[in-house]
Image (cartoon, rainbow, N blue to C red; front, top):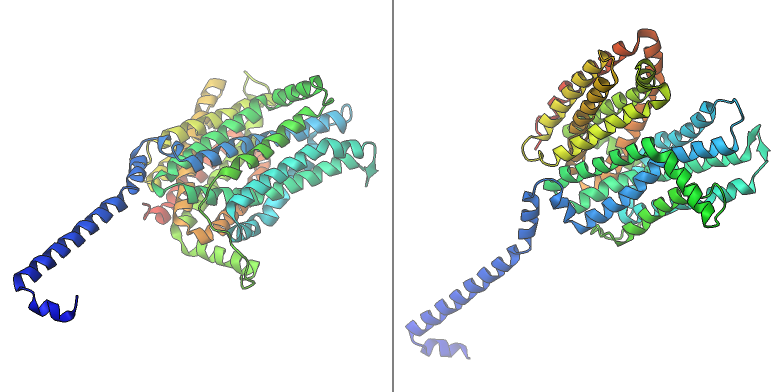
Length: 472
């Protein structure tokens, strides 16, 4: 149509044509808008579901969680595995095992102090899924190599120590080093695949699983490893090989499961313009200093972990003083705390929209203090177990909301650095209570130590409220 044709058209025909065109455009826009909002509806529906149901419908989270189950079991049974190997191959008759075990624990702790923060910096630069898969597979390979390495070095001595035991120290050091990369990558992955409204439920499920694996490790870790050895021998694998195969295969299976997880992240190609690692680490420290919510959450987590670490020392003396159990059965007391944390995690998954994270952490800190105060007066096993279960429940009310705060408030490009610094701070903070609690208990007794821990928990919870006052 030529431009001059419009001049010849009747005026009303032009108007009708324009109106019809406008109505057609409006209808088209309406259809497009209706189509655009359809994909968002399932997300809103999932966010409104209570408890664990929403996150269990997230296929990628279920994959990550499944990998966590096997990885956590391997982590918790690893020390039991090392103790079993030491007992069978290195400990002499009438010799205390404490020195051997302490050396293994030190070898596992050093990487947490040295590499925790730096690992987080690298995790921010790397593909999170690849970090999770590779660290699990490598940990599995290291554990599976132990029987062969011990056979290869049998009878050899270097620097007055069996070479086989020195290999155990190296393997423990390397497994712990890989864990320093795995932990921040795992926390960052949760933030990437779970919507903010469901983060607290996701962390609750993770805590429940962690506590379940802790209970399994304390209560039945040794018989499970013994059964694995028996099964290995029955199918011709040889004696004392099944337990290494079980732990190593658990790590490897966790890595294999995570291959199918989708995090939505793109492959980062190094350009050569990346800042120095120490500069990145400085950025993470400055970010923590400027963000009050994350700083407050981190302080509360450090205080809580320090209290829990102190309780692992106090539990041995408590078991010795209680008439119903022996000192060697202190694991029952720690398991009671684990049961409490699991119960608290389940309960929190239904409370995440009824109370703010700030209130949950405050009530949790005061609840932990009240439980410890009650425990200081307990002289019976059942009352002690009740107080420890209560302490576990309230501990979950601090740990899970504060971890959720860190995940939800940290931008994606800072998560590895922040989670690495978090792991580093907690691991360093754990060392002091482990060193001082035994001395304090000897000097002032169990009740005074428990009251002191109660005061620390209460004061810490009240003090950090000024950071959490803007909690969403």
